[in-house]
Image 1 (tube, rainbow, N blue to C red):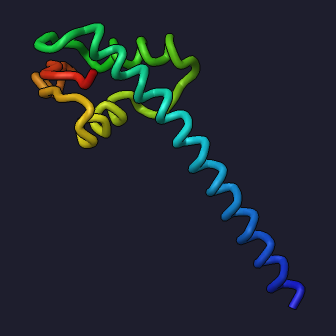
Image 2: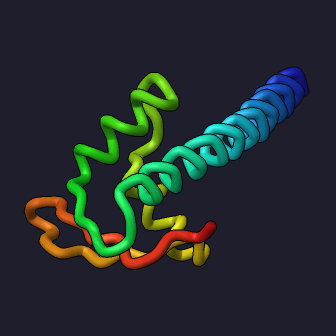
Length: 101
């Protein structure tokens, strides 16, 4: 019985950590969304950039190492907040087609 209680407490601790991590991830992602949109607006529609340029910009504005900025870039496109084309995947070259206001 004590083993079952211990397992129950451990499961609850893991669930609480998971909820806290999800909350932190959402907070950080919201901040990174804004920084990535700022970068894209600065570059401008029709212009190209490389993945490392985006990463450097995001790290300079948001501090520290965060989730992959290019992954969040894809998420922003999927959510309809910007558009871009991959010009050269091997060279991590992107062209911004549009950015929301």
